[in-house]
Image 1 (cartoon, rainbow, N blue to C red):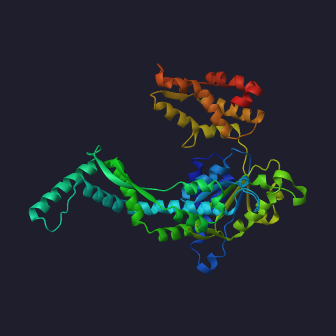
Image 2 (tube, one colour):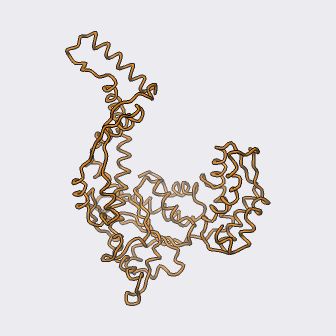
Image 3 (cartoon, one colour):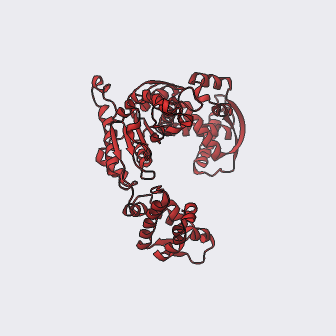
Length: 445
């Protein structure tokens, strides 16, 4: 976990997300408290639980992006799930334990990547030696004389230099490639993820790995052999244990659409709403703290950070189960986006939409530019479209920008004019008709 203060975390989020300062501060404090907890005495550390967060706000204002960016910033296992994907035990659908199983799998992937980075140099050297053995066959043993061994070593060194410099791109070698059968993936669509990790592992053992020889160019063969050496050098058991600890100590679960599982008493519900409270009851043990069996081992959920989010337009957080409400003590209301916010989203973030469009067309040799008034007009039109049609927040900007640059992007490959400046009149020409005609706008904007 990176050693970042709450202020540094907020500053890092500001480079990608506009506004929503209260939500950023809450998430930054929650993440920093996990770093603080790990430095407490063991007796006290076990009793310090994460302060789960409930974000409330309309779609497209940054709820998911805040959680995703904070997980990437802290290099923590992260998974985003929609609460509507799950059903009460006994109904057809995914059970909530699969959230933790997926989180553990993500933690193993992250830990494998870190372990692979540590052994990458040794794996690359071993892979090169294996390739050199194929390029220069022969015993090279004690039966050869000193001159023969020296000559062989010189030849091997020359081949090594050619291999490292990429001078043998067309040379073909035989490589054993491991293949996994598709049976597990096929069965997962039939609910294998709910049959238990033990059954899944047994099924994989029944379907052994298969290897086949392939004749490949040297660069591709080197890449495959290097990955095989990485897998050989990594201790799988130690990796799984480290991944499970990482999952328990720094894992983040983002529960989206939590408002969609709000519901009244069971006797007042029927039809598709029948399992809403059941999903809440099933989620409660995960958030409170329980043990989930995964294919890598047992995972305790006591210290996993849960961030729930929802628009709550047709319901309120008070309609959640009281026990579940109490497990999300930090509540943050995210603000709707103003025209000023839309303008900042278009221009300020490192990955701003305007910068993306300029960079994309630059690959075709087209120099695209926008006047300040044109950017202001696009921001205001996005807000008007949200107010007139349906409020989808900053996502409306994707449609607006694409609609504006559509003609330029289409003709960029064979355009005679390699410099294009988009002004406010051009923006209005491209968008005014669709915005004025509400029926047309529903389809185009």
